[in-house]
Image 1 (spheres, helix red, strand yellow):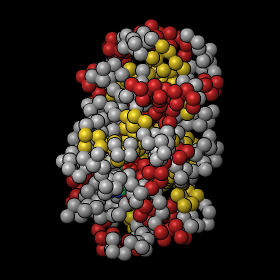
Image 2 (cartoon, rainbow, N blue to C red):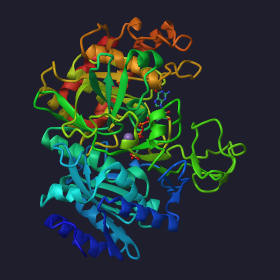
Image 3 (tube, rainbow, N blue to C red):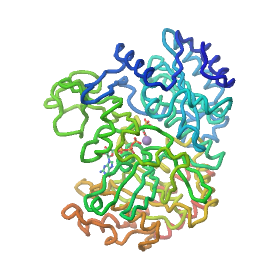
Image 4 (cartoon, rainbow, N blue to C red):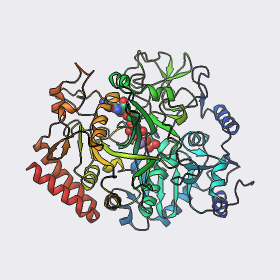
Amino acid sequence: MERLTTNPTINAWLDERIALLCPDNIVWITGEKAQLDALKEEACKTGELIKLNQELLPECYLHRTAVNDVARVEARTFICTPTKEEAGPLNNWMDPTETYKMLDDIARGSYKGRTMYIIPYSMGPIGSPLAKIGIEITDSIYVVSNMAIMTRVGTKVLEVLGDSDDWVRGTHCKCDIDPEKRYICQFPQDNAIYSVNSGYGGNVLLGKKCFALRIASYQAMKEGWQAEHMLILGIENPQGETKYVCAAFPSACGKTNLAMLIPPEGYKSKGYKVFTVGDDISWIRKGPDGRLYAINPENGFFGVAPGTNDKSNPNALATTKRGTIFTNVCHNLDNNTVWWEGLDKNPPTNANDWTGIPWNGAVDTDRPGANPNSRFTAPAVNCPCLSPEFENPQGVPISAFIFGGRRAKLAPLVYQSRDWNHGVFIGSVLSSETTAAATGAVGVVRRDPMAMRPFIGYDCGTYFQHWLDIGKTLDPNKAPKIFNVNWFRKDDEGHFMWPGFGDNLRVLEWIIKRCEGEVDAVETPIGFMPKPEDINLEGLEGEVTLDSLKAMLSVDKDLWKEEAAGIEEFYQSLGNTVPKELHDCLETLKNNVQ
Ligand code: GTP
Ligand code: SPV
Ligand code: MN
């Protein structure tokens, strides 16, 4: 085999992998467009990809995964640390030695008759001090094509890595897409990931959740930085000053939408602008000036398709018009384009649904055309509101951390923590109704600390401690302020009370003002809340009244008493690594809602 690197650790690992997997061919992904195009042509011949209408959707493709393989499988995702305690009670754990053996047995010979693609990739701008490198091997052109959008791939990455051993080993084998033998395993101590029997996004694009969160969160804990499930957004005010915030919401709870929001008319005309730095993952580190700086380690968006339209998220829609791979959406056969629920009110009548069987949107109203977790993989450069700082290797300075989830009741529209530790408490008890982004029941309330429940690569209580430790290294005047939001509060008829989407800027405006010390707040049992008149409702007449806003900002002590009991139970389930500071915050909450 011709080698693209002389790095001895890479070459030794590849020799071992090749001997195990027995590929017929080996292809190094160089990052050149001609190579990637040729691979996609090849995948079109086998039916793995479908080339879409090249006039309406240039360089766009459709892919369908197996019907049993449409979301992350948390029950089959494992953190393989030497001891179970290191993985903690929220992770599935298996012994590393036994797991390597089991996975090798499953994967042995599975590349026979297939090609091994070797993908060198960088998470973060190539060469950035905050970036990290991985090598993923895969037998899937779909994975290669997605990784080439979601990360920076190719020869340049190997040049930057040189002979270093600091890279993450990623093995992906499609095998037979057998759900009974599907495993997504992380080995944080070895910088290794091993994924078998899946072909779906978060299970196989190993740079994303597996590396950039599970492995990276462990590296970050060891090295004094943070890897978080957070979007990064820049807000430019009419004076031309831009402030950046990071927001953590669980999967399918609005990160992509917030990251690309369009300001309401009243804000636009005043000169407000919003810029996207990232929509899913942040790597955060203290800069020389003592503030926290964040980069987006990704290079594209793996976004939820359903619900994306020219009203809810025109920037995301525009981003998908070129060079995009659609997964599990509906295929409109009249014009060879794509459709999903919530795109428009005109479902195609001559279509194939996401599984590939005929679908008529006028008749087949009992089943969806697109899978609820169907996705687009779109290059970041397509995004009309991409931040000019997107490629900045130093990242952007963060003013606020925002946590949020889907809570029909309880959680108010917005509140602020009293200080850093209380902010960590608020993040640690984040809870949300589950979505289609992971397999399992939808709509069940579960605790999702920092929106990281499925992604913390080590013990959860220790992760909370790491958050507290980061706070100790920061000057309180420079530390991001911490907030909680809830766009999903419902009234008694089950309607969303807050219009959401672009109008979320109204809440962000209050958040930025709080960070700048430009507005005061009301102290409540759960933290600081806006005076209702401090949330700008101009232009929302008829949609939101001051009374309904007051309702969204109310604290129901009885419900919060129940919540405190739920938090206590949750902390108990996490064991004795939950830091004392957080137990203290819980005691304060209990006293406050008595
Ligand atoms: P992942 O990619 O899975 O991490 O999801 P995400 O957090 O980026 O979620 P995304 O922005 O794709 O939104 C998921 C769903 O939430 C979509 O169906 C949106 O329409 C809906 N949504 C997003 N923002 C809002 C909002 O402000 N209000 C309401 N009611 N729904 C929203
Ligand atoms: C999520 O589920 O949070 C996603 C999609 O962003 S996946 O890549 O499948 O994890
Ligand atoms: Mn996500």
